[in-house]
Image (cartoon, rainbow, N blue to C red; front, side):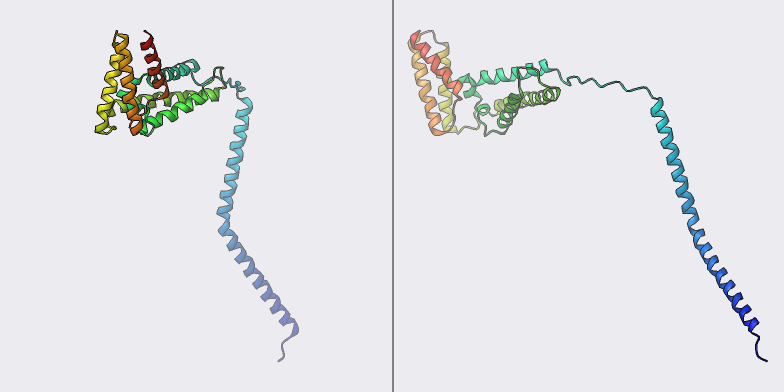
Length: 234
């Protein structure tokens, strides 16, 4: 018996419905895998939004901020006084030939501690001003003055330890003679003796300069020249 056309269409329709059901079921299963992630994301969004609302409410009800008054962060007069002491002590050393001869490392920039001091001193000197500068400049100067003070103390301590150990043994006797002659010239009450001692001391110092062993700072050399002239006219 030949199949009836109506039965074929019914079979096809049933297959279509079954296929559609299977597709929808597959989609539902896939979506169910992402439902937890969607729920977590929604919860995070909700919590963040609520927290933002709370922050905005606190900001609206908080007391108004007081204006920040800019004040100097350092004691400017004290920083100036610290650096002035370092400058005076350094100048006194450079003007004292006996101090230079006893601690020559303090006048020798090839000595690391002296080089560090000279750099720190130059930095503070460049930042020093007579007029009161802005707070940021005051802070830089105060820090530089502190570094200069520490470096000066360290350089002096190192020079005291080194003494004449950095000078060749053959030249130490020349240094000792120069020290003895300058001490005699300073303490003598006789003009002729003073003048002779200064002349001989300058000859010993010239030997040291020619050998490259030691060179007096200009201020110390000028102090000897002034003292020698005073001894000659006394």
